[in-house]
Image (cartoon, rainbow, N blue to C red; front, side, top):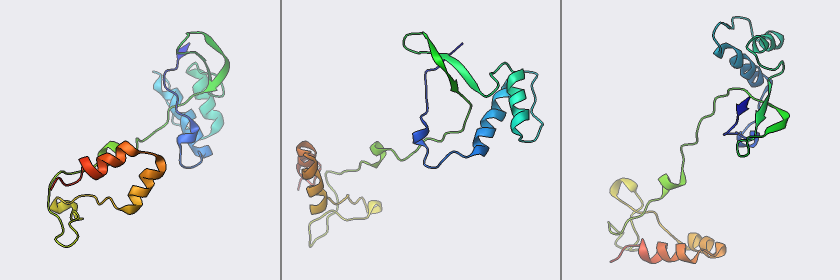
Amino acid sequence: MMRCLIFIRPTIYQRPIHMAEDKVKFRNKGPVHPGIRSIAPLLLDSNHSLDFRAGYQRWGAKRVCNGRTSEMMHCLIFMGPTFYQRLIHMAKDKVKFRNTGPVHPLTRQPVANGKRFGGVRFREIERDRLLAHGAAVNLHERLFTFSDSS
């Protein structure tokens, strides 16, 4: 019996999962147990026999229990190890503001270059976008709190 705590939905993948990736999942399940080695070519039947010798169900499905109630689920779920890389572009890393800094002498706007300690310009299009979403507090922060205080 296995208790599942983390599920990865297939909708998070940006491209379709190919048959070769499913074969790799089958191939990687068996050899994690001691005494089972995988030196056969990537054939579906040989990989199923590796899983069967390791104690798995023939086609990779597994009976699991509910993580909240600890009751056995009445269905078989296909499970297999896969490589998943985390997206490193997080929203909190993209937030950038400044209170003071260099401004352009004609427009009195913050300079655009980040290497010269410039700011991100918040113009009319961005203002209209925040108004359309009804984000009045965010708009107040951008225009008054985070803007140059001079």
